[in-house]
Amino acid sequence: MWVLSSTIESFLIAFPALFSIVNPIGIALIYHQVTAGNTRAERTALAWRVATYSLGVMLVSLLAGATLIGFFGVSLSALRVAGGLVVAVRAWEMLSAPEQNEGRKQEQASKATGASDDAFFPLTMPLTTGPGTISVAIALSANRPKNTLDVIPYFTGMSVAALVVALTIGLFYASADRVVSLLGQNGSRVVTRMSAFLLLCIGVQICLTGVQEALVSIIPTRVMPSHV
Image (cartoon, rainbow, N blue to C red):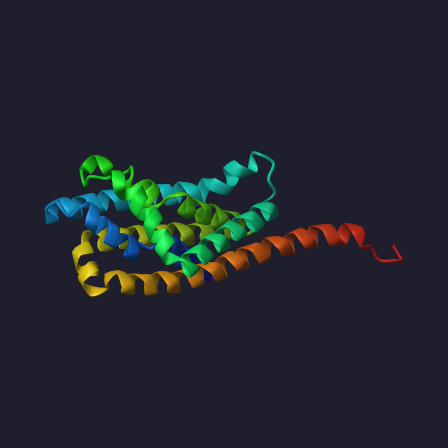
């Protein structure tokens, strides 16, 4: 049972974080503009290609991101603090100025023509899973438990979360015309702000975990009992 509960717990941490930073609902509006000249079948096929590439980017970042950075001598607690700060700052930008975030995404998508060759660049990177998504994934990877037995369910839950996010990307992109008619730009900004606040909380939590671990590793070595 502990394996299942640990897997669900990591999923509930990773899914809202990845969903918030990817924001497939908001980006579906831009995807709709880029692929306006395509047929519905072409838009659908392209949407699922982008979803597949996005899944690959998220999985690589989740499973190998923290390990690769660790080769440079960065401690896990430092990575958590830095990653949490990056996530929190990015979430604050999305929360306070969604218009600027939309403008940046529009600029990233400006080179896309809607052709299948655009599936990876620029529709997957940097439009859908760009530096922000990679930073969040690495921060989640750095937040893994120390116990080896807990690592497997933790990464299993995160991998499932990445898969579900990729599925939402495919669904929202393939149905971008319906998303536009249902939400519009104002509705998209409301969803973006709600997601950004949740992402801000997750970023702060990751940062606090890193600070707590750093303090625990420092204080015992400097504060020793007087009778020892």
